[in-house]
Image (cartoon, rainbow, N blue to C red; front, side):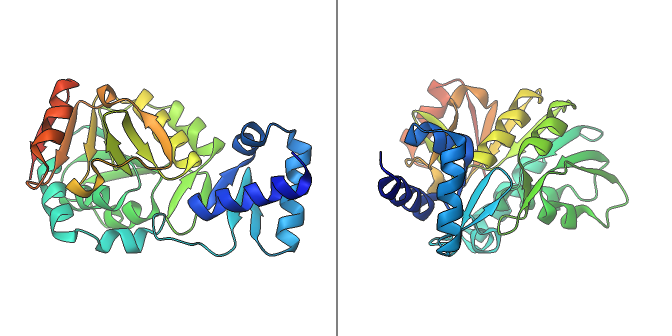
Length: 251
């Protein structure tokens, strides 16, 4: 592939997913890291992207998929009910990993007065819990992804790999028969580590997340112990989860 074609392909990728990492670009374009770095430098000079540690960010984001504030406003009533229901499934004294989604933040709100140890890569969730006298909060560290308000990347993943948790509460970008998926490669990397170190996995997702796949595959349905969704979840999607051995709880 010639340089012009490579750079055009990088532009197309950034239009879809806003962030791209070096390793994925090398695989996608079948070329070396040094070549990709030169392409990114050229595109940065053209103001197409901004280089960051491990990859590049689109200079002008084209969608709202990776914007926490925008996501928090969608299906707000359903997310509030899901948060309350999921919180009722967690026991006092447990160590809970909170992923960075807007629905997960509603779970954290419902648990703010409960004795827990929280581990999170989310600044939004840290703010929810910062004044709690009963929840101990540990932040992961890592590269800060501003619009999602989460910390990601190798440092974040190494920290997560060094702990263990009773429960993981995780949001998701899409759910199909093929499994769970999300909208960013670094986001998926940290979430996979969270799954590995947690004894129980609770997915919180309103019905709009079902029947569509997000950009990056995360894990098969079987990794979840239960999914908490809202009462409008279609019967076929309830059956899909149950057939995979996943408990379904509706709020």
